[in-house]
Length: 92
Length: 416
Ligand SMILES: Cc1cc2nc3c(=O)[nH]c(=O)nc-3n(C[C@H](O)[C@H](O)[C@H](O)COP(=O)(O)OP(=O)(O)OC[C@H]3O[C@@H](n4cnc5c(N)ncnc54)[C@H](O)[C@@H]3O)c2cc1C
Image (cartoon, rainbow over all chains, first blue to last red; front, side):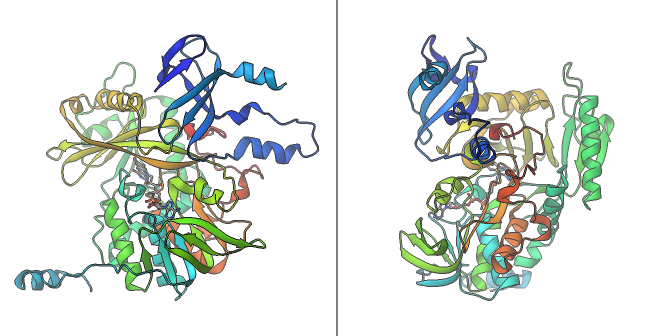
């Protein structure tokens, strides 16, 4: 697999470390009344459907940025790659 | 039909005309007491133990493809009970004891071969961890022997003992571990279940659940809807997508694991070996092929095929452990979907939906569990009580902070 890094261009997937579902960006608020339940959901439960999957990859052997990769888990085809920090900033 | 030496002799003298198909291919009835979804090793074993031990009832196994086409026919056939945590070890030892009597139980040659498994260690810290694990195994009734380098050398003289970076210092040996002919396990349980009246329905995909007021009343399938008092899901790598049809999210990610077989060679590897300094394990099949594998590819996948970086990694591990493997040519390689759980341990439990039960999260190690997973799941389905050795494999252990995390990796499935 090649990941088209937004800053560095196409890089081999073996330069990256995989974390998992991009939903891990959305850390719950620890002060919320239902924090325990929300953290359980966040930490342990996954939607894990076949098909399109947004996921976090870390460019460990490169510029050490976190990417959000949109990949089809049935074909391994990569549709979109974004910098995770841009997504996180746009949300907050 | 019972298999025996006498039967073979009789058939030899009568032109082998008396062999019949070993299971029927029935159409589904409209109603069952128990439906098991998934005709892999676990599903078929569950049906067998339900029919033989727990309940004389109307039972069906629904399989979307053909039985044995899933992981039960794709794995590297290793059985062992060499776990550290008490929540796991008792269960896997129960499984190993069931393997030991499986052929007699099923009247079927599943080629259970207790050729021993050795986990190699390369550092002092690894030796200490293995000593501890061995003690835990012995406490749970299993067998374990800590070997030094000489002990390993007497069995495997050809290994690369003096590797400058990762010298082999010894290994943790479980003499009762070994291998089993994987698809014979599916066929053996299928035949035994069929003989006890279980309907094995192939090419029948479950496409939905019939759930009303928090109760599961049956399933929809590509062969119509079927009612059941209780439904057990045992679909390995498809766990998340099947349970999603019941509105559940699981503590599971689906990953791909690859395996490899070399051309047939003369006997060279007497048992099962795992490398402690890289991702590589190997045994030799009775046909002579070296059967080996390594790590999962490491990212979510439903593709049933892996990628090249892991192939390279496995090949590197193999060559650094036993350089002579470099001369063997690869015959086949393939991948299978595995349901990696958040702590690397399985789940055998009721769901919050009445009448719906789940067995899954077996990661890359569920083949060795097959007989016990079947037994424990059958007991849970029949009695609503977990089997003593499986009582920790619950959905709510993550919420309660009671993870069964052999490696202490945390909620990171690709590290388990
Ligand atoms: C390459 C590889 C190597 C492995 N090596 C080992 C090993 O050495 N030792 C070990 O202990 N374990 C090993 N494993 C793990 C082991 O194979 C699995 O954990 C175990 O086989 C899973 O249980 P099963 O046999 O019931 O699964 P499967 O055989 O996969 O059965 C599940 C069945 O469910 C069916 N199904 C799915 N969805 C539906 C639906 N909607 N409706 C109807 N049916 C459905 C599938 O078609 C499939 O046949 C390995 C796995 C792989 C992939």
